[in-house]
Image (cartoon, rainbow, N blue to C red; front, side, top):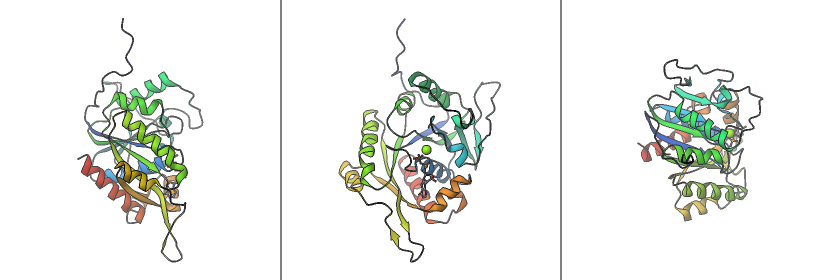
Length: 264
Ligand SMILES: Nc1ncnc2c1ncn2[C@@H]1O[C@H](COP(=O)(O)OP(=O)(O)O)[C@@H](O)[C@H]1O
Ligand SMILES: [Mg+2]
């Protein structure tokens, strides 16, 4: 018998039009915040699912106020039924294990878990399946790219130079995996000074912009730092929903429009 081929052919998920991977080189740059708000923004005009593929640090259940919910199982297909919130279909390891339980899986188990999230979930008809990847360049990223055709990847970064090396690694990974890069989102790009309404730089501005330009990588948007973005996520009501007229929500809406243009 032939050995199982880990590079088996990609098969699309029936009913799912575009898979959009949200990634970052580093943790803590706001990847899950961006994935969540991007899904919400896309969801204003399209059918959207959000897959929390950050097996080690799932945060989608908390960010969407669905902590502790348990997905049902369709008795006919044996598929997991996603949790629906604000019209977005959600799936996360966080719905399946205790919140404080550590996941200690490696390669093959991660491979299996990811495969099940893609195949054994009743995603139904979706225009976009947004995938919140773990930070870095590991097994989960590889599995996603091997198993399904990814329409495009978005790399989230903060502005400063310490993030640049990680951005380069993430870009290099998607190039190797033949995943089209939709562009970069700069998170916490600036802050509006509440005293005078002026833009101020939270972090020293690094060379990420010039790097992106030199590589021909599109800049999809600049999301300001605003404590209300974090507070909204903590409260389980993403900022796109909580304050849809604010600068942050408006930027997420523009980013969603750009993605709609590239992946109609
Ligand atoms: N634009 C922003 N303004 C304010 N706080 C933010 C912003 N983006 C992210 N945060 C906060 O930064 C922290 C890390 O964000 P998170 O999305 O969990 O990052 P990651 O998924 O990359 O680890 C969270 O506390 C989140 O609320
Ligand atoms: Mg996260």
